Image (cartoon, helix red, strand yellow):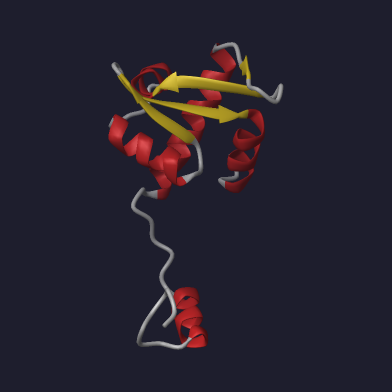
Length: 114
């Protein structure tokens, strides 16, 4: 018994996965707005240094929305977008917060051609 399907063989399963439509829970425009929000935050706020001496930024999702003037994006949607892009999120008393490195931002900016 395999872990992906009890009915299909590996090759058929892989073919189905490759043929699946490329849709996401988060619309591409919301993801682009999220990357723009990170960019604005990085411009306006100082970075921190992690345990490996890498630069990173962190912010509450609500702060990111307010600082970047994102229109029509709720914190939940922003959080889902950021989490789906591999960023670290955690819950605090004032809502969810995100952290991202300069390297992550560079990769996302290139991917979304911003």
